[in-house]
Image (cartoon, rainbow, N blue to C red; front, side, top):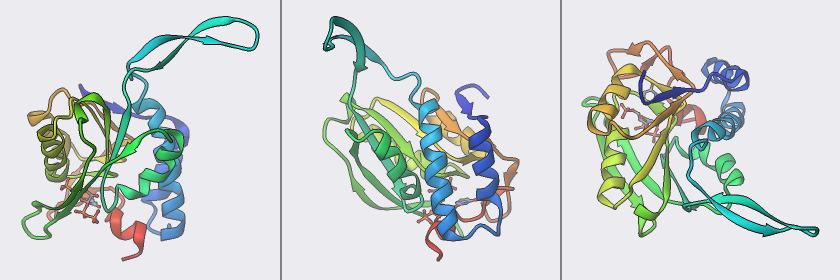
Length: 207
Ligand code: PRP
Ligand code: URA
């Protein structure tokens, strides 16, 4: 699918399979989600812009690279928190913003309840993090907010994406690259991804 990178790395797929397993308990689920998020970050940041800089080693002056823009990580609450820590460890200089959205159970509409984002978002590489892209309602709502706040260089990292969610995001934001470990079959009647992994927030936090 154009604009979507499916990360087929064996370690990512191994962890994803264990996350899907309904016998995986919250403690293990948290650990696996953190590990997989870190692995996915490499692919998701591969096209970050860099600029050439000079560096003095103990022996000589040479050239190298540094990231052109600072990074802001934006997990969508709650489930996005499960991917934050391990990504933050790899990008310790990143800022962190938060967007709180809760999908209403019957209408499946994403209800906004919180935001806390750095100023001047347009200057940053913004990584929007949410394990699940189902109807796409939450993804689109989060992107609306980021764009309203001036974000320009956005990428979306999901663990599992449904075709319906990808279509919804791409219809409104065709230039936002999506990184995922899997494009699943479809949504069920209640808006859950099939085969998916169930409710990511509930599995993370044992609710
Ligand atoms: C889940 C998930 C996404 C959203 C995806 O969150 O983490 O944010 O559903 O569904 P959508 O693509 O149909 O909008 P949920 O609203 O269940 O909140 P939670 O993370 O607090 O459990
Ligand atoms: N949210 C989840 O956590 N899982 C789904 O399958 C769909 C939405």
